[in-house]
Length: 441
Image (tube, rainbow, N blue to C red; front, side):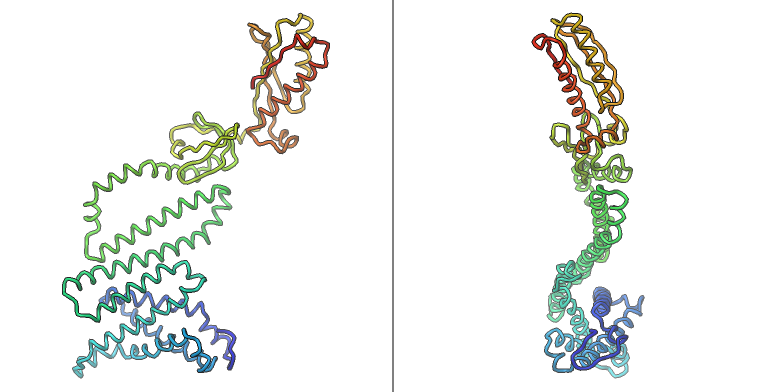
């Protein structure tokens, strides 16, 4: 809290109770509480956990004192959340005596020791409740709101049940399920933290390295990390409940095999997609040919990629096809080959046929959109068949006709060449009614 209404405090002291630091201490305290509450015996292996808990209590006391000094007691209490914080601070004061309780119990035969333990646990539980103040906002913790509320619900129910005398078998079930439930709820928070970390650190790298394919690679990475996180969390929860996770998974082996067979296509496509993105066989916008399919890559996905063919239709192709079919990336070529076929009527006289062929050669050799061409007169059946094979420089076409995409270059150039030949033949002395022309791309 940097600005106050009544009294000012030094900036370096004010920085100690800034919202970010307060939130970090609350999370640290929540971690310690959950660790000690799930397994009280853990303190024998990690005695520093109790020391950290006491430090957190001292920090919350200091925070309350500084806020009260800065705002004044009346303004401080006007905020309902501050009232809740003050109750927590007051109830936490006996925590400072907790390390002395065992000695007092042994030396003075203090009978209400169990009640004191419950009071201490209540005070810790109330400190955990401070998370509600921040989780209810639309800030950074809003992403974890559901998981935080779930943890608070689990702890609250367990605390209330601990105040009631329950049958032994019900207490056993509660003891077995309490820890694993908290572990799984914590895994949900960890999973979201890892997702945020990926968005902050990994996504910019992928966008810089893979461009349009970054989104699909990121989806695959997020899926793998989430699955591994939950598998590890599930194993820990099962082991904590006292069961052998290996034996449990082995017992589910038959079902796992069935699921594996059902999911093999999905897994195959995912793995092939990962290989596709990492090896960069092609990216969005490339014109490729794979198997019997040819077109421009319009979408890259987790399970499939989409090709847009020359007629505008779209074809979704499973990623695993890259394992069985060769990939021809036509976008990396500098030149394209095209061909058109002309059919001249057999009713043309020899002079007219020679003149027509000469016009076709002249137009083709001087046509600005092609670099080189070859003209063949094929076997005559019912017409004079003339084929024109031409070469197009992609960079030249991009300069002359920048609106064309790669898959439309060859048909567009072929159509323009045909029309130019047809126009020049029309202007010649050939008899129009004796001239029949067709184009076959």
